[in-house]
Length: 336
Image (cartoon, rainbow, N blue to C red; front, side):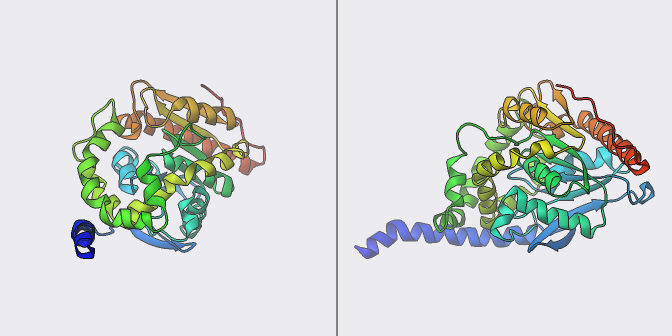
């Protein structure tokens, strides 16, 4: 009976485990870090910095934080060409994703990620940052604004996750985040099944627009399905809602100029909850609503967002000049 049980249960599990080991090795050989690495708070952060030295040390740096199931290449694909040379740009793999390490359990939460990223900004001597977060990265953007307001002078939220939503998250994230069971799940199913489901998932997240043909290759999609990365991603999603509830109580403290961007056709994150919540709770928030855009507006409406980001940078520069002169900062106009 034991032998029969092994043949029907143990053997298939062992087979997919060995398959995962082989695939992880191949992914490791195929994709190598091509940026810089800095260790902050026990997390090794992988990043790409594109500086414009002539802008000066106090010129605002745009800091880009990707959403769930992504990495720095997502934001880099969208904005590098549109903004390079106009502003200094910093693209970061959030902890556990891309080529950044997982770190302590706290790095699964927006506050822990914000602490690590704040350490990186300090090490890079970035005195003035405008943080741009997409989706789940927007929760980290808000956490950064709360943790380091002396350095984070502007905030941009793209298709943001910022407030509590009805219901929970997809079941596979809940399972993958569990102790023991989650590790077994990630080491047996995510690589063979994830690759099969990825095309449909990409289609859904880009709707109503098509995904760029080179998107999967551009973001090095297989990196996500490595067991450690998928599990880190799952924990960040599964643990997010309670943290969002706690964090959102402090949003009134975010006095920085803020830009909120969403699409009218976003069915992944509801603008009626998150965008309206940010406009309600942030004292100096402005809204850019993109007609017919879905959850990936940075790829489908790049120029519109790039223009708005440049305006936000100018707003931060003007406020910084006034503050330096000792007259206090002007209040931006709030629109909805």
